[in-house]
Amino acid sequence: MNNRLEEYLIEKGLFITAISSILIILLIITFIFIEGFPAIESYGVLNFVFGSTWAPLKGEFGVLTMIVGTLGITFLALALAVPLSLLCAIFMAEIAPSSMRRILKPVIETLAAIPSVVYGFFGLIVLVPLMREQFGGTGFSMLTASVILMVMILPTIISVSEDALRSIPYEYKEASLALGATQWQTIKNVIFPAAIPGVITGIILGMGRAIGETLAVIMVAGNVTQFPSSVLDPVRALTSNIAIEMGYATGMHYNALFGTAIVLFFMIIFLLVLANYFHYKKKVVIGGGYL
Amino acid sequence: MNRIEVENLNVYFEEAHILKDNNIKIPKNTVTSLIGPSGCGKSTFIRTLNRMNDLISGFRKEGSIFFDGKEIYEPDVDVVELRKKVGMVFQKPNPFPKSILDNVAYGLKVHGINDKDVVEERVEESLKSAALWDEVKDKLDKSAMGLSGGQQQRLCIARTIAIEPEVILMDEPCSALDPISTTKIEDLIHKLKKEYTIVIVTHNMQQATRVSKHTAFFLHGEIVEIGRTDKLFMEPEDKRTEDYITGRFG
Image (cartoon, rainbow over all chains, first blue to last red; front, side, top):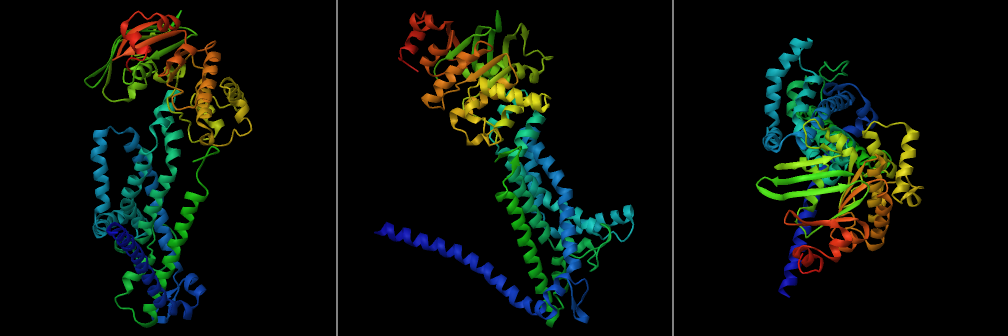
């Protein structure tokens, strides 16, 4: 009897814990929608999302420049980070001797633990002047932000991809080598393709971090609400918009910042669904076989 | 004529002395069985013949292994070329997570054979030799992971013979299979021995008597006895061999 009571309490306890974390998230989302909706409604959904003028004093709230800014920074950061991290993960998982790996792995994971303000500060002091000297302009740009973000998402992608590569059964590697394949052929044709689902997970996680990163981006991106004509132009991200203006926003301006959060929310949901679609639904096709 | 000659082979992993003074001659186009209790070094021995142990850290060997008269551990030997000539089938069927066609074509591809007609012809030939063609000919583009264990193992054999090796090493190829699949693999071994030299590790002594001409009995890393299979099983010379085959230990 006592045992059954204990089971019952534990079961319910776990249920309540699980449900409460979901409730908290739902509560936050509800709050954001309640606060943000008036601005979107009064300015019009299409005007809000596709308007290119952000002038709170004149009552204009178009966030398209910032959507472009967020997407530009994120995908440029991914374009820089993905090749680098995949090669690094392959090196660590397949080529580096175990003594080297024992040093590399914790060092790379430490990179993920550095607070973003430190990265931002480094970007401001070192990278911005460097960009100014190399490419002209102010040095505050989409590219600068992407380079900082690249460094910030490298550890995530490397770490998850490396785990994925190492979890590929040793039998595959053995089979390939026994057929007379070289080490590189084995990595390229067998190990890496089999690890692709895990690698994609790593890229999704990196992308999530890049979209959400605020502070480091504010410090180096320039934060101008204009369409960039090149990667060297300053841009403002959606997250930056909220952080920069929330200190003094009132009235409709305040609601419009929550509206920005709603747009960000839908963008992230869209990208996650898209990524999951490639991850699960399509599976990953390797020369006609399914993983 | 001997395809493989092993002279005074000693193998160590770190400090552990795994194989002790092994001497064995494996004639061309015959089947040689390696029997013995678990942990006696049979698998280590077979993996030394195509240098798969090179991958394991702490591996060290003394003595010589000649393949067609050439020492395979000489620095100028290309391991890739060696493994092309000395193919291997593993204990657990290990097809790649690719299509059936790509599995068999894999070896051809890594050796630079890309001509579509040649590849298709070789794939068909290999699957026929491995007695798998009729079962898979309509689903070559389906994943190999959907095949049964016995079919997967025959696919692995097809994959091995697609690159036309001279020797096939089999490390307990039937231990994960049911009796019907085992019979199919054994029939296949009988067929393949006309063209290939086969070395097979087995725990199943009936299997050794069924498929092989010669048998070597391993115990604690030593080759206790080696000779014609019928003689080794009917009139073993060594007391330990007799004890093992009559089931007194192991």
